[in-house]
Image 1 (spheres, rainbow, N blue to C red):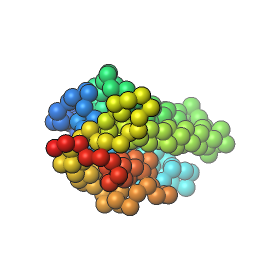
Image 2 (tube, rainbow, N blue to C red):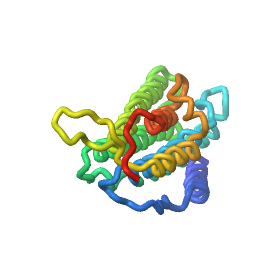
Image 3 (cartoon, rainbow, N blue to C red):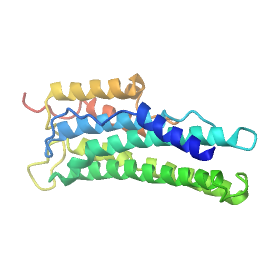
Length: 238
């Protein structure tokens, strides 16, 4: 019965998930603008991954096999979203622009780490379903699940590094040593496009800034949106 469920699970994952990660954006590894568009797209996939989860943690009070199978299904769907997010920023890891490279590496590391941790979660439930762990409510099992959740939370907290570094890629370096960062290296029209894409991808709540209770993905979008709305920076010549 467990093997039948596992087979059905695999079929549903590949039948329901997106067939491929389609990225039609132009890739310019040295452009803070094109990278920011890619980063925003990756936030969209990450948001989708987070929204996949609707199940409560399986317990003895529920049909454990069914609820564990549903959770595993959701985790696998989310993994495809995170893998898409990682693939979108992957090419920018080799950018010669330090800010872009740092942002791409930070985002890529978060997405791939979450996939790895979620796979560990699946493995824990598979042990129960395969009879390798007798009781799904033993303290050791519960502690391992809680530890994985805590580790995921810590990983997500590092995602804002990507937004901060991407912001640095959008301003011109000072012409003199010790000079201040004070001028955009993108034009006003490009800033507006980025702001529109953030709102379209993550929702209008980003316009209110980073708030307590937001997911790390939403907070990243809010941080970048707030930076793009800064009126103190000098405009680049159109």
